[in-house]
Amino acid sequence: MTTKKLYIKTYGCQMNVYDSARMADVLAPLGYAATEVPEQADLILLNTCHIREKASEKVFSEVGRLRPLKQAAEAAGRRLVIAVAGCVAQAEGEEIQRRAPAVDIVLGPQTYHRLPELVRRAEGGERGRGLVDTDFPVESKFDFLPEETGGQGPAAFLSVQEGCDKFCSFCVVPYTRGAESSRPAAQVLDEARRLVAAGAVEITLLGQNVNAYHGEAPATAAGAPSSWGLARLIAALAEIEGLERIRYTTSHPRDMDDELIAAHRDVPALMPYLHLPVQAGSDRVLAAMNRKHSADDYRRLVERLRAARPDLALSGDFIVGFPGERDQDFAQTLRLVSDVGYAQAYSFKYSTRPGTPAAAVEEQVPDPVKAERLAMLQQLLGAQQLAFNQASVGRRLPVLLERAGKHAGQLAGRSPYMQSVTLEAPPRLLGRIAEVEILEAHPNSVRGRVAAIEPEPVRVDSAARGCAAASAA
Image (tube, rainbow, N blue to C red; front, top):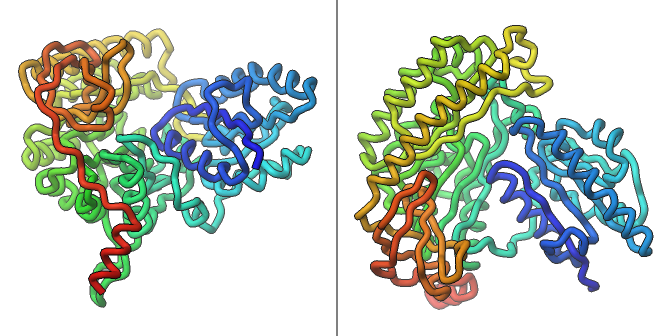
């Protein structure tokens, strides 16, 4: 089969990073291999996110930059297919067709298992509405994805849950990703084993509302639970040989149950870091957001989590300038941040999402006020993050060395607390866990030196496992 070149540009969340990897997997049987150079590509795929401000306009701008590449390819006698996937495609499919004729394929995040057929048709010259697929199919895309994956390196993502039933008034996820759904536990465990066999040491479980996971339980004895929650899934993943670290994101406070809190105490492989968005510290604003929890509910939850795991590092999401937010509401957000203390956080000015309830609220906050509030919040959050990093100086932390650093002779990785760590180390340590003494703290990272190297994890490939089972039988 002739090798064709695939260029993927991924926007937004970690779920999109995972989805992009799986789209590359489904296109591999068509002869597509990845390229980092769009000018070399036969297929350019934009995997889009609708969360950030002006997300759709950024996509249209990118398509405009790609149009000359398509024209140059046609002039050279070859076909360049351009596809737009993901949440902007789901929300703006008709608008993309109208405004961006250079786009051949539009598909939503639930239908990328159908991508190979759409690409075949586009390669054959088909255009128009037939190459738009933004359905919410009855069948799960995960049932149609190839089992073999290209591997993601030492730190891998694994999607276990999609969609959301919470309907926060500012959020498009229920409309672009659909209702909450969870993959069967056996399917997740099988994919995790394949990722570990391909070199993964750490796996991050992904979902728009991942702690709402309720996947079908593996076949078990009569009377066993018919479904697993996230805590039970984590416990089973922790039993996989060679899987040293487990993380999960993103969570909702309302779905942080007793079993999951206990897992942070009882499962050593579950890292002491939790991304738990609160969005605001004002009960009035939280009610307008339809979050269905109060600021004090969140504080009490944090207390329970830290009682279970005292060294837990917290991350959060914050929106400033939500419609109707007043000075006293914003002051309550600052108070909550001061009370909780964050190791990391993400904060944004509110921006309207067409079709969401908050977009129709008349009492919009002026942009200069949003900007002022955001600067104040980020100053406080930045000071907390720097203080957390400074508290690490002098400690020895196990760091998974995931990638080459920016400078020669440098590797980079993550501490258990999700801190970015850089250090001088030989390339042979890539993919290993090193005990690192932290020497310096910076606002967004720490620097260290290797103190010791952990033994390589035991890996049992599927063939060896099958032979062992046959021998035991």
